[in-house]
Each structure stands twice: as C-alpha cells, then as structure tokens.
Image (cartoon, rainbow, N blue to C red; front, side, top):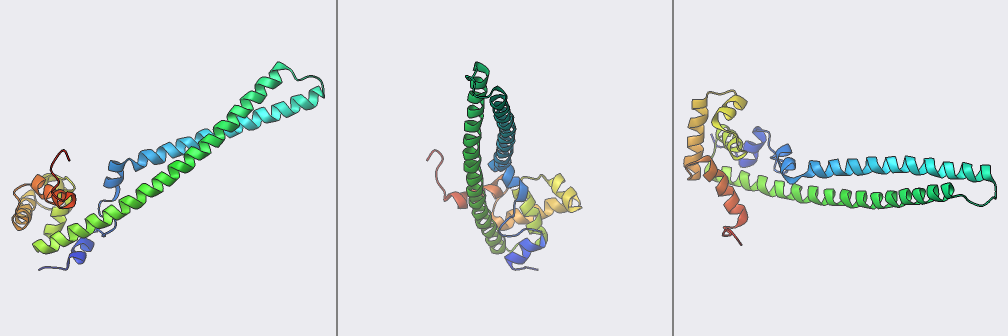
Length: 195
C-alpha cells in the first residue's frame, strides 16, 4: 500500500520542518553556542556582584574619610570597579551578539531541515516506499545499522535486512552509504570534490 509522502513521514514521527531533531543540533554546535552564552551571562553576573561590592566599598570609604585626600586604596578600588563595569558592558555586547548569531543559525537550520524533509518526502514518494520501508530508510539515512534499526522497530534483523533490500532496489542503490550519498548528491547539485 502506497501512502502520500507526507502521510508516510507523519506516520513515522517526522515533520517536514524537524525530521532530524537533536541529531542536527549536535552537528551544528548550537549546544556549544548556548553553553557559551550561559557561561558569558554567568561571568557578567559575577562581575556585576563584584562591581557592586567595590562600588559600595568605595562609597562607604569616601563617606567614612570625608573630604580628606583620596588614598591609594580608594584609587585602586575605583580602577578595579571601572574595569569590572567595562567587562560587564563588553560581556553584554558579546552575549547579545551570541544570541543574535544563535537565532540566525537556528533560522537557517530550520529552513535547511524543512528543505531536506521535503526532499526526503519527495524521494520516498517517488520510490513508492511503504510506511515500513520509509521508517527503515529514514533510520538508515540517520546512520543506524541493521541491528540497531531492528531493536528500535522491535523487529527481526532479517525483516529489516529485507526491507532495506527493497529500499535499495527502489532507490537503485546497493548500500546504506549510497542511499545517503543519493540525497547528498541531490542537495549539493553534483559539485565535484575540491570546488
């Protein structure tokens, strides 16, 4: 039984806009960017606490000393406070740039996921894959081996092997790597290596 390609993908839990889920974010380094932003914000927070401490200390020392000449300790604390405030300002600017960059990357990744999802849907429909074959093909494209696919689908390895053979025949390829390469070749437009 052949199903329209959108139904096939939906039946195996894949939407056109997010078919690879967390696998893609790991490849793009989005988690590393978010971790860097979290660290940046934590440093800004610590610098703010330190700047408030030194600012309060300068104020209390000045009030305590009155209008007498300012000592070296007060000057050093003032310089440290100015350095901390400068660090806070630069940290906030860096954090804003990082947030903007993360949003830009997320937007680009969302577009790419949608395009790849649509392309996979089209190919699956073009090849006439059944729902089971589409499930197995998607897991193979994601890099899972036969035993892993069988475990995920709670099926016998022989069944998965047979379904993969059907997928390969319909896609006119002979291996998992050729299946993946057929999608990459389409997406890259057959650009020769090194260009």
